[in-house]
Image 1 (tube, one colour):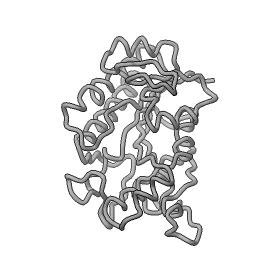
Image 2 (tube, one colour):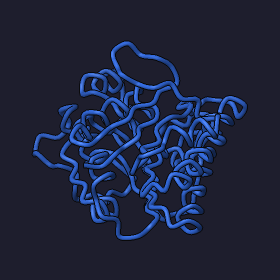
Image 3 (cartoon, helix red, strand yellow):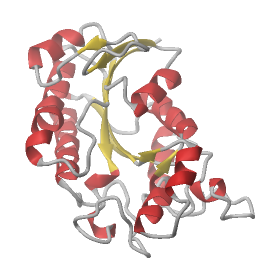
Length: 266
């Protein structure tokens, strides 16, 4: 049984992580108290508090962040910059084995947005993006995630820490996906269909991030479902982590009647 600390445990991805990792020894942290979860309040910008919080842990799943692609830099600096440094420093000072950092598709999405002011949009013919492609952030939020990925690479190289930078797409329930894509076929709907991460696939992915034997010390992985319209390549993630996504936004939306899973795509 692995001892896993989860920051941002009260968020949408955090709640899926709790389900996915229920067989492990979990310690949950959140920015504030939540009556339906037994979490410990942690200010991730407080380095010493973070160090103390990770005592006795094996793995850190670091989800805590300002998650808004529209956020200004001043609102990102403490949680997404200082907090990320503190996460890695606390992991090393407590001799953790692995850090799973919640990065984002926004770290590599500028080339496929319809406008620099619309980070959650997708052009009609997007370019396939692979995990080892150069960063291409579409917002200050994306820049903060690029910094977090670079921080992970540094700590993996400098300290031998195992690091997974997980570029998470858009976690939505099936009903929320249908509602998001119900009106029309525009840039926002294309983005949703490409970036969808189903709750079930989210749990599968997070379990593999904790349990898989890594082929290298530092790994960048894409966190989406097997969407037929995806342009974030899943091949590398599937090979490295043994991730097997089963859901496809196109199937859920009833656009594909032939039963394709989308796994033929990049």
